[in-house]
Image (cartoon, rainbow, N blue to C red):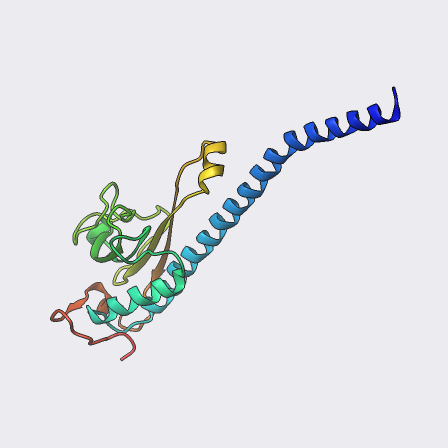
Length: 210
């Protein structure tokens, strides 16, 4: 085989190898980007639930809409590019007050405030997406609420969509991430958070921190 024929053969083999390897490399690159997006979303939601849960449990009392509007705004700031606090967003942010049941009965929902898309509901009351006052609370069996205490649950949910091309290649679909944090009230007057004072619409009164 002449040198020119050998060179042409090598070029042909290299072209075939390139054609075979390129789609695999592209898929790996897209999968890596999707994984990074998933991990970043997870940590954003974790920050929302953990930090706001810590703040709320130190409140002496809670007002609506004043305090709730503040928590909603702070949740969105922490969530960054994830729209989890408007009705047309890709997720939700939920705060729930839970009190112990009497005489050994199951814990119950004292109150709940939900912000964001109603498609992404709460996990604090079984199959219901929203929890009504008096409903049985769904909390881990290992978590016991002492008598006279209040448990604050913060939940954040967001949908994560892969790139269109990688989704087709991997047959993957939207992933729903749901995180929650549970905190016992840390303020001296724990019973104060067993209820939320409801003021007139548009009120800016904030009991938390006052």
